[in-house]
Image (cartoon, rainbow, N blue to C red; front, side):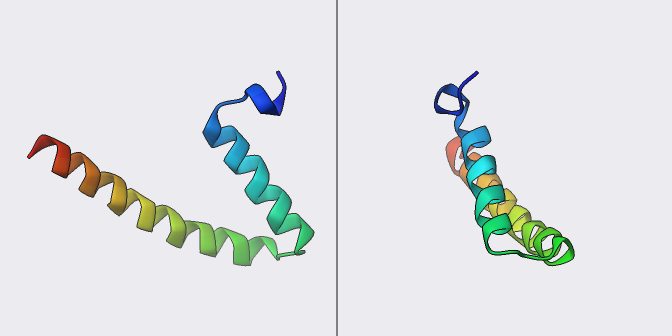
Length: 54
């Protein structure tokens, strides 16, 4: 499967990995930052779900 035809979340993951590797980010820094990003977007997703069901 070509990346062009991959699901959007796979394309985004590959882009993020490439960006982080090109900038030679340390793995522990990336993992900590991704945890913060995940928490933020999880809250946004929950807020969207709450808005839809309200």
